[in-house]
Length: 477
Image (cartoon, rainbow, N blue to C red):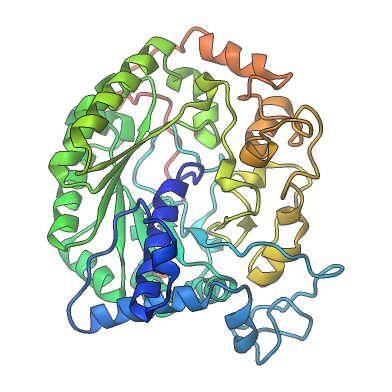
């Protein structure tokens, strides 16, 4: 699963590129006034695909004023107002109190399923996974995407679990394409075949982000908890490049693979990656459960940081190389998700809508569900999305800190996980009165290596999470 905390550099650049390209095509001055984005642009397609791309880009620009398409779709009535059920069968929700002027989101993390063929010990999925029988069906996800487009979303990560386990993935991609939303598939590569990728590309898939666990095949299989997964990833990378789609390679870094960071970068370059994201593990879900087995040493991090700096110089102008800082060691809090309810939202497999992927762990949040409320009301008015939006909720030391508009107090979910109080300053920040919790964890003796798997498989790098919920027997995977 993509945890979402470190996806902003990729989607921000890509979405901005799409908007600027559309503005240039329309001949207005937006492209001349703005800088260029950082994400790789999707290649133009011949014939109808190129026309679809132009329509998609123009739609993104037209959608930017908040609620314009939303009002038209509801027959002059903006979604979220009272008035029975919406156009897609979901209830219309009345806002509590007057409307709040908030910036429209441009990014959606669509967690299509929690089922996954891998068993990575750093997975940030929740400890209690959603069963297949509780997942949103095809029509519900299509409705979510239509509402997201009306709300202003221009990019979505199709994630999981493993989204390729959804047999309706092509229909979901096609709906996003029709609504003008740029799609990126976040996948382990397991199960990706040439016919499946061709069908997804025909449906409008714009890019692929492929995960890899280690540059050495056996070590990668061990960390992933699946024999042969490295070969599947290598094959998937080859298929993506042959299809002409932009390829991003994502690596979650931890004690078990940090010393191989140089080899991992060179592997991704050999695979033809346009962008490589080196994401030091974020400690939520299974990663927090396995933290002692995953936390690297400071010496490991310093060696890796120096190697990445050298590789950035070597690859400058050829491959975008991103290093996501390990906040347990930097002493600085990151602006999780670009701010609570500020630029993106997450919809989980059962339809729960969250300001960030781990927010369901917060007590008393009562996150809304897209089965019960439309996205416009959820984004603008739901208590779950307004609770930590902005800075008014902050206690000291955040309230009086000069960085409060930059880091927004750090991560609410990490604050709760470590202190039991989601409103406290993120302990990753050295100004936090709870910073010792992170400092002590970062210097604690590592957990012992796990014993060999009794079935004769290679031992995982950290205790495995259990397999995802079993596939349903009704044909929906």
